[in-house]
Length: 142
Image (tube, rainbow, N blue to C red):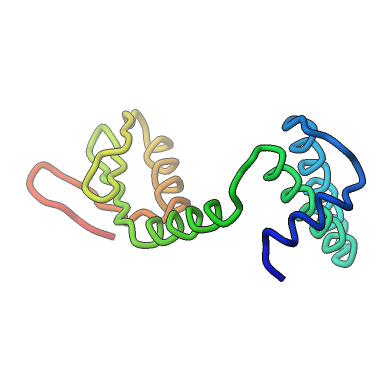
């Protein structure tokens, strides 16, 4: 089934009628929250049902917001490819940290303590950065 056709079927058979984006997103949020709640209670079957309901709510929200679903999918795929191929580096200096993505500094902050340094390392790992320690006379990669 074509995705646009599927969205129309869901739109025409929806449980609630709205053209308000906030209401549509609120319904989506509720279903996702219910799915997460079911997972936290180890109820996989219910989590799957709620997730399927969330998918319908997502399609309704996309329609309410006039989002072209095929464009949205193409955009997301391109974003994912870009993120996978991005070169992310965290440079740790004596007194500051820099985040560099594809040779562009995207952010930096000061380091004041060993705790700050440890937190910076955690952030770097979380975002998939290659960590480089920069000293006055050399660079050490980890």
